Length: 329
Image (cartoon, rainbow, N blue to C red; front, side, top):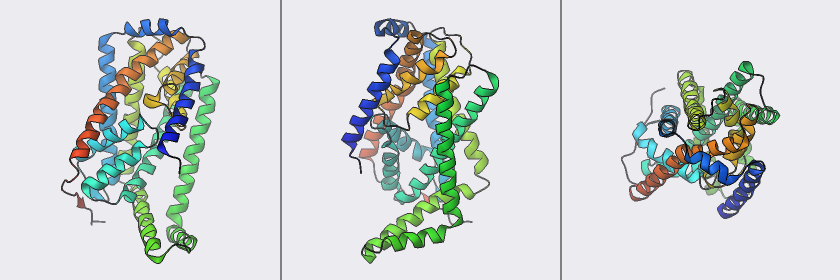
């Protein structure tokens, strides 16, 4: 397994390359001066969008967990914020932190929680593809890089759907295969691993609940709409009057870019998304780069600050009453 320091170094390297690509046509001091002239009302909109994104994220997770455990949103929001803060420091690690906090605090199996995280990733990518469809239908100004990124996103969704279908249709066969592959493990450890696999599959199986699906879809779209509002507010704060759908191009590039390791606070990945995504909408590179700075400060930085506070609070308060386990069909 890749160590966290190595993963962080890799993220810094990739972020540096993305930042260099973003700065090729940008005078950094010029962009900083532009960013400093941002209008406060739009900055406040970006902060509200950031907080709303996290609330919808926690709400969706509660819905996904509801067939298994009866959580309240207030029981999950701290873990969601803490995990996001970790993710913004060391990419792709935050979800494990989120699961660890809830698992230890409420004494529920981490593997079941991880199953719902996998479902979240699927709906996140699918939501971005929905927005991309809106972009394609409403404008001809789609950058080639955005089109390429959309193919990557579509490929990820197809692979995830295929894996879930296989697991759902042949669950028992998959578990038997796993048991055979673990022949070299002691019986005690084999049973432990298989138990975690069953719990993970129970987390994945929540998506079979037809009553939950509309809620998950709506919350996923609302969640990413908040990020679009944050992107648009960052542009509007600088007086950029480009089409609203241009925010979708930025979102697609950022989301696909984040499938790779990223630097802390997504430096480089965010800047590349703004400069390349807005280029097709005739926004100059210095202005686009300045908008990316506003986005980082007023959308991402609040997540880090509130998340670190939540992480500190979680470290001091592990023992809380466990949630009720669902027993009804």
